[in-house]
Image 1 (cartoon, rainbow, N blue to C red):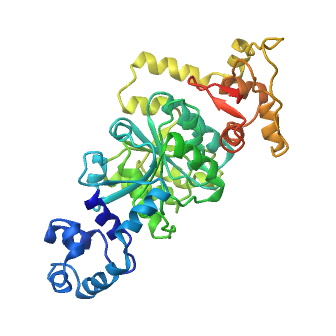
Image 2: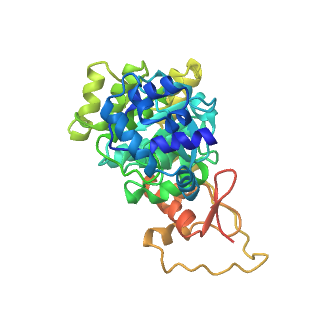
Length: 400
């Protein structure tokens, strides 16, 4: 932890032009950042590939930074650190030309999430309802099968990807941020952020408190791409930042899939161009991803395709049976205070039983709400209002 304190201290030094290359030069010259931090000005000036003005700024700026304060800030934000030299560090990031020396995270850290079947899903912040709904369902279907869903917490497709993963009891969802792990951007993603804190992971290469900057977004995208074994672009314009993630993926020889949408919708223009140029493959179902991972036999694929082409609403209407709730509860149900709920949240809450439980799919049938809206209401009732709770099988019941 002592060595980590010096890594944290170096990560807090900004505005002196010290990037990955110069930090690597310092580390190679001194052997450890502790030795470098304690080195004299003359010793810093002797580091190869470290310009004199940077060495002088480092020599003066380091005295303004407290080692103890850095660790206290991490504790305050309940953030942890993983160094590139540690076994828990995602080995996939080492494929990058400039892999982060240090990662900050909140929530759960499970190396198996990144070593197993990580899939990134990115796309437009102003996505169509079709792309949002398809993304949430695709994310859920993959997460249900043990895939780790990686995205960027942004509004639109990112949010839909995280929400889809939340429908699984074993939520394996990771958000990579362009600022510190305490920076919720946009603020509308606060509920998603809170769920990730409890059952997912929030990841960044920046020290807490670092405000997102325009130049940080491509850096964030390179991490999203490198952590993945497949990158899915749900909807993207020709100049979309999501395609930057795709470009990083192609450089790393990681397959890119694009969702096909309406030909006359501008938001699909970038995705369609990539498909036409052969840069990305068309994705129509989660089965395309399973096939890429060689998890499907031809028979299984045929069966899954038939299921995906059938009318899910009709099937659910045939097989659906409402949850059984005793007519005379064993004990009185406590009244719920719903004054602060939106009309949609109140509408959803009325369908969640106090005794027994109800699944997400049953709620979709009962309420006829878009998947994205239902997910948002459930998270509000769960995280913000604490009026419902999720059982181990993923079903919902009112909180007692």
